[in-house]
Image (tube, rainbow, N blue to C red; front, side, top):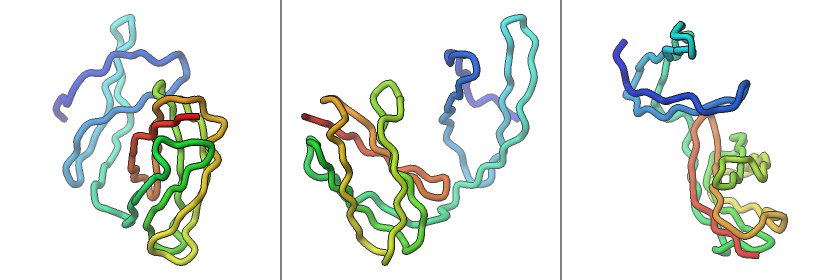
Length: 140
């Protein structure tokens, strides 16, 4: 193993934390966790595969900035379970919905974004542990 970086602890007790380290095909990772008293332990090994499992794309969001409703247009194979999440800029989950394309190819879904206060958000489309991100300005 080699060091790929250092991330100081900043999550409240019991909360999760995301690490973003570029990987090449087939790498193995583990975390070295150092406690405040200097003791350390290693996480279980995590085997990373960077091959694409599913082919899906986020094609468009309209209108932008979003108002009370947002049309999300995406492309994915029929039957592929998708999760669509909207996070505020602190990372808090503000909206989440599951979608499964019925025919494959390009499809659209209308989301109710009327409960979101004006501001910047991050829209995330997830399939097979892959994520696509797009900035989402909301103007109410």
